[in-house]
Image (cartoon, rainbow, N blue to C red; front, side, top):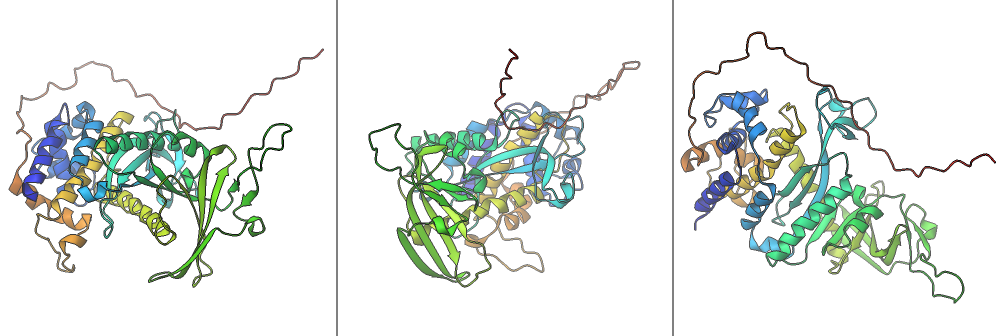
Length: 443
């Protein structure tokens, strides 16, 4: 099977898993890939690849039911075999700002770094939805990211709970396919005891960043025979060098970009609220750049990489940040102003499949170079460059979607029918659970 036939097979299987309104949803995806900078979401209906009228865009997201589990299995079917020998997973979450959507339910206060969509100056907070993503890195030499799950964080759950559930689903599917033990990379927001406890049943190795104000504890001393046995040993404060013991291993390497890099490793440390999850503590210092802040990493698992590899593996985590920017700017993920949380989830479920189509199409299409751009080889071709030629490629391979069947003009709104205003919803705020102290009753 040629790569062009593989792309056609993927598109047909993707079409079958879209459920109701599959024709409009599929043409919406093609219009998204072929349109660079639409002024609004409705302008996607002007694309020649979308053969329906503009209301069908919103009706497709209202009536469609994409199968997220089936789409994840479909994408894993087309992942290179080399990527499954030691799967490298990346997890993170991002915000979809909806500041002015007062009629939108289940909006939350969430972290967001963009100054234009913040609630107040100086605070990296916005109002909208938060989405958790778990992606697979298929290659070592490129920054391609293949998201497998991209779902909304509901108000009843926290980010680490959704990430742990996504990790469990993906790891089970990888084990069913005979893949090797996966290594998952996470940011410092996931370097906490609740996330380590939530991922304890998952057979996966974790490599995560630690905040510089964390406190870890060593192996408890031997039981002396009196009282309860100790749970914690010596204290290790990351921002207090006087509490650091001698490192178990030290390595100094030369990097082309960072210069001399010193890596130190301490074994068998744990967090106070997760004493059963012992980890390896790693500190990375750039000796040639003393102003650069040191990076603390934690590894928890069975197949620990060497010191010369572990910090370079973690730097690959930043590839998902590039995908977030690409999905918002080029795949128009946050462009539509939808009215329900379910429509946001259905539109977001299509983003991983659009990325997979670009990954499969990069080697079968002609490089469409703008006059001010340089040609890119197939191995170095970026997702944005592939998008520039997707319109011509789709015109060649065709579409499995059926042509629209006009059924006449709608009668419209009945005369005299009362229009009711949509309800307003407040922004929800997640608070910490606090134990209520019982008040002493007066004697």
